[in-house]
Image 1: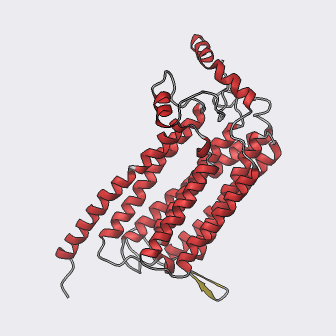
Image 2: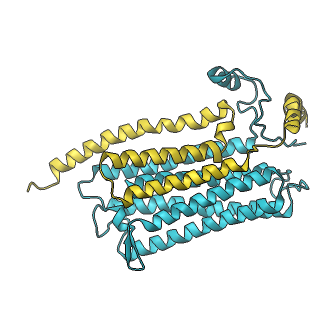
Image 3: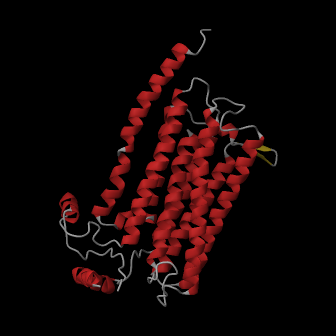
Length: 125
Length: 240
């Protein structure tokens, strides 16, 4: 009980402001509809990449572009990250970036494995 | 006891801009996430850990695909369907993508109406979201059935590299499980919304604590994350 009282004291100011300000994340419905439409367009575009048979670097660049745009829209607007405090946004969004380091390590590793396999296991034709 | 705290997205707690503000929040006493309720912060941290799980799955798939000397099966052909005499590449996956994106849209609307305390619309939109999710899982079951009947197994397939099957079943299986759990989660919360639990501040069965409409947003975070993961699976597994 004592703990709860201290807690309430420490945050009394904040809760009162929250009450006056209204509840949670409120944004105009139009914004969601626009983002929704864009997600449809971007999905259609990424499907067209396959349907039209685009190949090579252009294909990979387009796939990554549409993927990043879609992911960005979902996280920023649908998950409300654009309106969150920076302390939360950075805590959640920065760590996944380091997965790219892991990707780099595994690219080197698989290139090496591939080379060894070609040299040792694939019979010369 | 147990005062309910709402997430407060207004500029209530003054802070310096940029990195100075982040340092101020993180080095302050008691809590780093100043205006975010624990429920929401914990959902975000769970989603971060889930990001690493799916990241590792996609990484192992990348490693398998890059290091094999056997040609990788062409997903465009593997997932093609013949509809009314037309051979359309990847069509089932495209439809699944649109179903999931539609469900994300209805979920965002549900969160919005939740904060407006529109009980009926919130519950209805959550149930629509759950229905889209169930449709997605159903189509995935159809896809699995089709591939298994064509001879795809975790240890081999008729078209090329054996790792195709293991990567496919692991990644889409894990994602489908997440969607299924999301559907159950949505139905449970939609029932609570419909019953008016958050208007009369009824106490939870397990927690004995009063809930509020923020749980709709927290459910939404999980649901949007499931959609987010699909965006990456669609790009890397099906399109690449």
